[in-house]
Image (tube, rainbow, N blue to C red):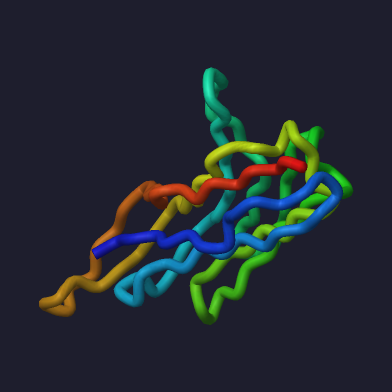
Length: 126
């Protein structure tokens, strides 16, 4: 009933751009914060960018000035525009959402503290 679906990953050359999308399932009618994490092989998962429901944003130092997070509250969708991509940006990018309100098939209201997407691979290589 609570699902996040990422799209937009792929292979890009250094200096290139990609735009990731994270769409919440239609059963969700409100989300607190949304964010993007990434995990590279052999490394810990790290926060890349986050955005609150009031559109306040936060970024990892390594992506400031290159990445931009945004969201469309009406669509419960978050985006990550990634520019000037570097080899070090290669990772699986995972969408995260906190504070999710949804309606189940019976029309009852439910709440989940946190949900993760499956992840989308971003590879930066020449």
